[in-house]
Image 1 (tube, one colour):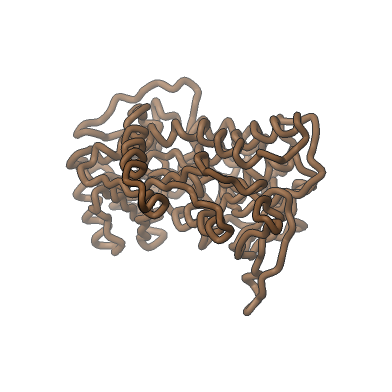
Image 2: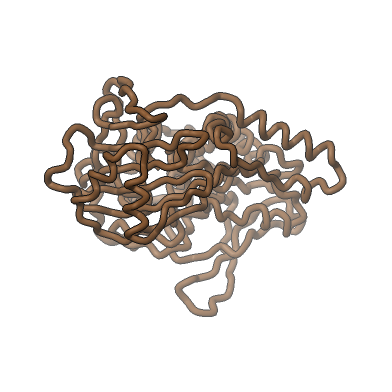
Length: 450
């Protein structure tokens, strides 16, 4: 996106958080998703210069990006995430609503079917969720970032690797490739701090390994969930008793579910869910048959008279994954990893965007501590530990649900990290299972977005 062009959202970039001192230094963020955008905003409070690197070309109008394949599926901004985003982007929620986003009261405007029956709504007072497309949300935040005087946006660039000092102890920047120029050669872009918020496809473990730094331990907990989404025009005579309809899969055998979520433009985002490899089809006939097979007919009956606006699109990369950057034996000074690059959560629990915004809070807390000491030494290890303490509970509560499905599998890379230490492998696998069996998430109809 050209920063000089007119934008349709307001761009009040002043945050409530105003640190006492800045680092006369340059921070660089990899990734223009929610985690990267919020990280850039936090860093701008502490560094004189911030650069945001995004591999996709960015345009003024909200649009689906190749680097965010899950963006076409249902998204809800839950109250906790709203508070955190509004703190750093004042006026964001009102802007979203004025451009067609839909407010949803979980206590009165959601039809929630689970375990073979309709659930009684729980009162949430005045708290509401905000439903809109992922591109609309990212665009509204991005336009505020682009207007910030301390932040430079470089779109259409691929990070090819990290640059470090000769001892491979401190990051000094990244090597970039201009994706808009054929046969472009990598060039150096200097930075004092590099934050990897590039998402689930992050190459951070490989980058560290190439520098002789052990990669993080990795756990993957997978119940093999798949989604298929199709956009519809909301019918004129749609049921006014609900704004969102959620049929939640019910373990151990109720593998099918679906969501109708309102969006800007008087549209419905209809996402079908299949657990335990019971993946929803991506052809039109199969999509409707899957919808008709749900344990209640209400979703199928709702979409039958609706006008389709897109073809069905599937997504199956839904496994939970944690990379234990908080337990590295050695850290590359100045290199931080956050967002889906560390904690990837099954979208069925609607906690991905909240986890991204919580990551920014961990970043702010870590930087605030560093400013008192006026040094960046130790920031990498301190941040990764703070991130674990802030987001770890969300990870635990989310993956607890996965063990309700008999097909759920745990995979790890312990054998590769400790090929001769069977005790370490057994201990780590046990820790992963125990960690994911604590802090169960509450069943609540507010948890409906993805």
